[in-house]
Structure formats: structure tokens, C-alpha cells
Image (cartoon, rainbow, N blue to C red; front, side, top):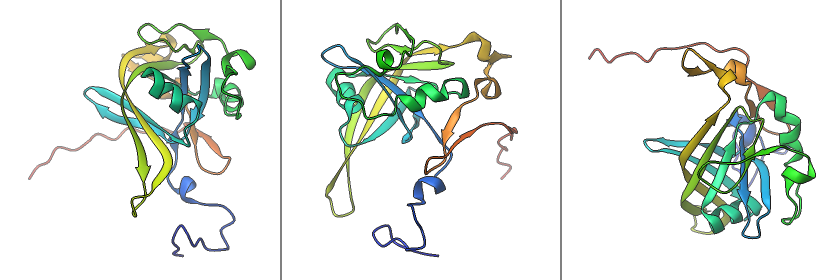
Length: 202
């Protein structure tokens, strides 16, 4: 099968692209509005984009609350979405009004951040405090703006639940990350294997 995105094959009931580009980590992002409302929502367009310094990005289709808050204040927090918090993560995806705090409305416990103002999810197995470095509204091949915003932030603080550490490593099996698989499907990491990068022998 071959098709172009604007002429999807009619046998495909739903767009498969998000299922093909999977699994994707979930960026459970918290921000603080200029009015002091703490917002929390998951983003499946999320990833790390640099190591030195460490950088994270999340993309918002439309200028939603977290995107606006991150741009207005220059700060956001990534909270680790794990199996134990999957229900809370899903609840926070509801399209709540901007003056409603998902933390308060759904009873999600907060913890103070050390460097940035937005709170973090207290029970998250990890969290990263970020300061915004770049904001890009994407454009299509014809140069038209799409209304999707990519927000990149530099990690300035890292929180880790000590119970998730084994032999000096963050143990993904213990942390049980939830990933997005497309459609309404989510997955868990359960079968890990290590592969050592080979040295080039020439």
C-alpha cells in the first residue's frame, strides 16, 4: 500500500502514522500560568533532543495551555508517566478550561520544584525541571504555518525516586514507563535486552 497523507487509502479507518511512529514516550508536562494556575497534561509528541546540555521538547497541536504557559513564563516540568500513574495521566488529558488546575481537580499530589516555579507530580518516578530555550511554529512544505508549536527546554534540575535506582542506573523495568502506540493504545516496557555499540574496526 502507498498513499499520500492528504489522500489516505479509504480502507484505513484512522490515520496510521502515529501508530507507525511508536512507541513514543509521553511528556507529562506541568506549567504555571501567569495567573498562578498549575496546569498538567500529557503530550505524545515528546522526546529528548540533546545531551550536552540535556534538552527536552514537547509539541502542541494548537497553542494549548501548557504551550502558552511555557512561552509566557519560560519554564516547564517533565513528569515521568508510569504504570502506577497511568490513570492520573489519562485524566489530565481532558480538555479542561485554562483556569482549572488538573492537579487540584483530579487530586494529583504536587511537590515543589527546586529551580523553576511550576510544581511537579509528587509520585512521579522522575521529573526534570526545564527552562525554555526555543519555540518554533512548524510550517508545511509550502511555507504555511501549521498551528503546531515545538517547545524546547534545557534541563536545569533532575528528580529521581531513589527506589528506581539499581547499581547507579535508572531501572526502566522498575519505573514501568507508559508509552503511546497510536490510536487509543498505550504500552508498557516489559522485555528489555542490552546491545553494546560496536567499535569501528576499519
